[in-house]
Amino acid sequence: MPDQDVYMELSKKVGAEHSSIVPRIWEAVCSQDEARLINSLPATAEELARQFDKSRNEMENILQFLFRKGLVFEAIKDGRAIYRMPRHIIQFHDASTLWPDASIELLDLWRRYTEEEYPQVPVLLKAIQAPPFFRVIPINEKIEPESQVLAYEDASRIVENAAVLAVTKCPCRMIMRKCDKPLEVCLQMNRGAEYAIKRGTGRQVDVEEAKAILRSAEEAGLVHLTENKAGIGTVICNCCQCCCVGLPYARKAETNGLLVPSRYRAVVEASSCTGCGICVDDCPMGAISLDAGDVASVNADTCIGCGVCSHSCPPGAIHLTVARGRDFIPA
Image (cartoon, rainbow, N blue to C red; front, top):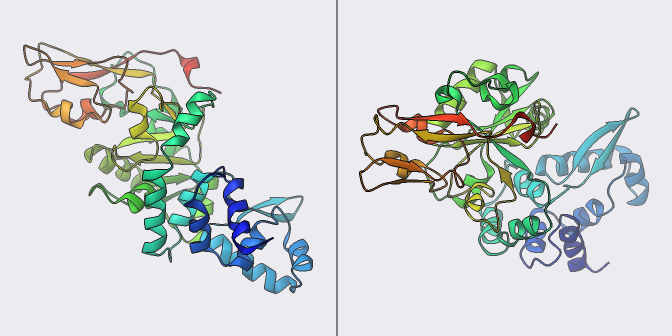
């Protein structure tokens, strides 16, 4: 296979077949020999050693180097290590960005991709009705007391129930660099934490530090996102509206297929609202406005139930109320 074609083939395998930028990203992060090896996955170290005429030890060293780069993932099956490449463009995006030796040139290529080509991805996913990747976890301090908050929609309880925790930097803010929101706030759990710790891209934290990270994210107006399923996933992202690859697209009907709201929506107690407008500025969805009487009003169709507005409301005039049933979150 011609040298440039292998980068195009890798791009196709992560769902970026028509991209002109993703092949350049592959070229920036791996040599032609490394690209040919990655293109041969999935395989074991023994199989690759035979295919590329290397010793077992040489091949294992190469695979560990590619693992550290975020280009190779390891799974143990029947006592054997099977290596694979990133499953899709988001996994490639996150893993390669968090490589400790990632160059500014690599990050700039990812920024170009995010700005120029990525916007078509949410459009396509919505058009083919692909299941949403992420869901919103509400800040539960202002959920009405009579509501039954499920364990997997409470960020604190999620981290309490995780066996292993780690924190990494936010790949989106590392790439886009549009705001000064906290950077080291992406919480990894269980398999995700083990992967980050083994790679050296994250550091292990205990439950108390994880909760402190959640609180700092809430103070910064960030939105908690996790996998769109019940139970404990592998990550809690803390997302801003300017850099995230998911949150900004939730504001438009044609691109809102990447994530779903929480089961809650914001409600304003008009008698307590002072009309300060802080919630209007802080809402990541632009779902709040001031009416003619300077009272905050929530667009129920746009609200994602994140709780950012309720957390920042000085008089405590906003709370979250149940808007969707328990079966809204898929098992």
